[in-house]
Image 1 (cartoon, helix red, strand yellow):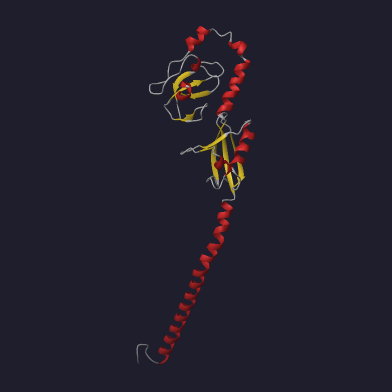
Image 2 (cartoon, rainbow, N blue to C red; image 1 turned 120 degrees about the horizontal axis):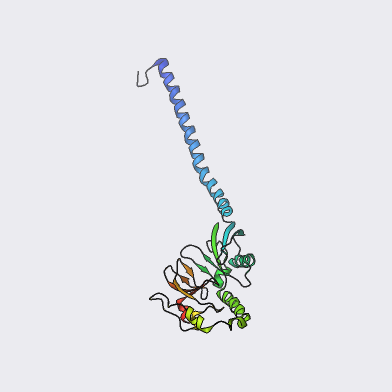
Length: 232
């Protein structure tokens, strides 16, 4: 009778085998269609998704002097100089402020090639947070102008009282002031020697100041000067 038997039983088994083979062929054809169509669909969809994700940059700007924050969406192809102009207008800076990252490595964007580069090229897409610092020369110059206007008032200050209020040198290892005038801010206020409570920067040279470093501070002007600048 053979392995499939004989008679009606053999005919039924033959038909069942044909149905199984046909189903297998249909499954194989369906799998091949899906396998070839999926990469093509992914290839056409990926550029669109990538382009949509990188089309704009959502930038949060934090003012270092007022602590005010503002968020604005720029085109990803916009140069960083456009962000600088926006920050200057938003926070009322007459001169172009300095932008830097708020997290390590705390990159400071001030080179001409950085300002000309697009936000996408600088890695600021799709979002970024930047600290806006006023130009240190502008910050100090405004204080000196006020000091010049108050010359007549400053002349009445008792010199002995100024000497008595002159602070001690900064902590060991950080250097000290270079004389009586070096212990005063541009507006004539005594500077206080202390250690930096948290990481920040010098308002005169814009160099970063790590936590614990010796500094000179004028609380009246909200001014921080590093030991190097104080030594002159």
